[in-house]
Amino acid sequence: MSDTAQSDTAQSATARSATALSDTAVRLRRPGWSLPQAAYTDPEVFTADLERIWAGGWLFAGHTCELAEPGDYLTRDVGRDRVIVVRGDDGALHAHHDVCAHRGSRLTTADRGCVRAFVCPYHQWVYRTDGTLRSARLMGEDFGVSAYRLAPAAVHEIEGLVFVCLADEPPDISGFAEALGPQLAPHRLADARIETRLRYRVAANWKTLVENNRECYHCAGSHPEFTLSNFDLGVNGDLRSNPRYDAAVARARSRWARRGLASAEVSFPDGAWYRVARLPLRDGFVTESLDGRPVAPFLGRLGAADAGSLRVVGLPDMWAHANSDYAVTTRLTPVDAGTTDVELCFLVRADAGAVDRDALTAVWRATSEQDWALCEQAYAGIASRGYRPGPLSPVVEASVEAFLGWYERALG
Image (cartoon, rainbow, N blue to C red; front, side, top):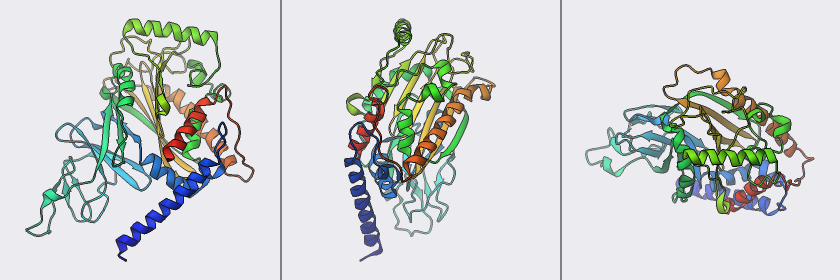
């Protein structure tokens, strides 16, 4: 048997083993309860997650404003894969697997940059930004460069946000684009700049972080900065009712409609992987800041402070809030069964001038770090021998149940 055949057979066997264990872990889940321990902690389940969820759907890669000029690129790492997203000389975005067509070397070591062409550091094969091979030295007179290129990946821009998909046949993204585009467009994130980034390594399984994001059961007791400006209501499936909140939603949607600001809530339609919802802030707050006042000039076409906070969720790896003056995106990257890397990016107008970064990041730095501590505490318990699946609240954790249902279906 050839080395290639042996490698393929070994990878297939590993995938089958991971799939079988993952299927078993999911089948053992009781509806309305959290997952069995193995679904969070077992390396083979983690492998199945990467192959069947992360490699099968759309992932958040970055921001259009990072890719403004030809040659600007960023990379997205997921498991054993790395994708390069680059602005081509033709002005379009291209996505390529970071694998030289010669002998497989990585082309990049930086997570972002600007190039005229991609040059393999191993044997100096040179690729255009559209992925086609431009030259390959010492390959003989009859070598046809036109027959070789970087393997392509799917890429899609939606109003300043960039998504990639590793699947050979990417799922339809048009529903998400139709839901997100009209609501995010007034913020004009394509014309923004990334003012600062925060990076974290969290000692928890990626699903623990998503579950935490999908409920606000914990918000009142854990997020004093967040709840200054935000109601702890509004998560899809949260059955609690509050007359002040209900009245605030009705008033805000009436105002937004008069201004032509789209605000239709689209929450995981038919079990889909995305949510878009513009929600009001508390009285006296025009943005998610500690004192309610703007921390930067208004974004895009938002000539007034009254835009609420546009919330975006894309499973399995991102959520974002777009306010009148800044936006913040959160991106997850699974490292292993018990580790997840997180990057927060804070965006302001490109021409905003000097911005007080402490004021800009105050709410989401505090809220995120509180969440990571909660997730690490939760995961430590999940990984211990005392863990048993627990019941989810039908009042405030229906969105967690919906996520787990999506996870089960995505595993196939």
